[in-house]
Amino acid sequence: MKLKPTNTGGQADESGRGNPPAWLPWLLWGVAIAMVALVVFILVRHPVIAASAPAPAAPVSASPAKTQNIPSIPANSGKVAGLPDLVPGSPDSVSREAIGHTTIPDRPSVNPTTYLVSTGDSVFSVADQFKLFPESILWANYTVLKDNPDLLSIGQVLTIPPTNGVLYKWKDGDTIDAIAGQYKAKAQDIMLWPGNNLDLLNPVITPGTLVMIPGGRRAFQQTWVVPTIPRGPAGVMSTIAGTCNTGAGGAYGTGTFMWPVTSHYISGNDYWSGHLAIDIGATLGLPVVAADSGVVVFSGWNANGYGNMIMIDHGNGFQTLYAHLSARFVACGQSVYKGTTIGAAGSTGNSTGPHLHFEIRLMGGFVNPHAYLPPP
Image (cartoon, rainbow, N blue to C red; front, side, top):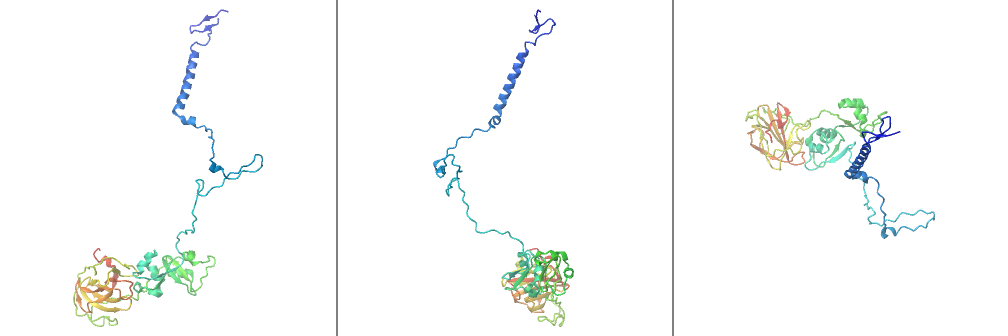
């Protein structure tokens, strides 16, 4: 058989079929070289891949200071080598100072506490100190204060309820449902209050036990409030010492009010349901002026905690009252004019420090002085 070359450089047999083209090996070599070049390029651009393999551990040479305490164990002795001794203060040891106490996190009390009244205290400030409503303080201390915040005095011991509501002394015959209804509270809240320590299956309460009524409230028994004294003939308020015949008329108010002292900040009780006045901060002897023109209908001593007191009727439905005065400069029946000095600030009666107890009344009812005084 005779072979003859093909036009591609290979040889063909008689059938005409040729061997692989001569350029194909060169092509395969070129592809192989390209792949090797690609691998080299990747290794050069991303050396982390090459470095990911774990490197052989370097031999560790122990210093004499660290090996001197390691006991020598003979080979095949069957014993296990012990740990090296740590020298206190060495770099291999950690020193911690012992703590001699444990901090206990603050938790709200669930039981009543007591508070000793001191200089400058008021029902309002005590309530703020214990994060309570001032009403809750009054309701818990009726035997001491008789619902009158002006009966507060230095040295008194107040009962502080653990939460807002009524602290009630249980009586024989009381039931939880009845007491909850009386104080506009929920029986469930009384049952579940932790400080009441009630057995939910058999809630028996011993008479005389103080029971917290969370969210409870009651009306104030404000029999201590000084009645409004209008101007008029003798006998209008003849049962109150310090009144007089004011039927002859006199000065009339302008209908607007000024601050009765140069100080304009509240030092004790503000106006609230249990204190129908504002206590204005004042130094002892600071002049007190008439907030508006009118006739003095009372100038004297009040035994309900007000001490030296002055009341002015302004002839237009308004009356103003000034209490705890250290001195009174006007008499009952006298006409005064807006800005006239009528007395001096003090701390007479039941008071824990110098201030002016100031009231504004309209048609015999109490109104908030802040609504009628200029902005401080």
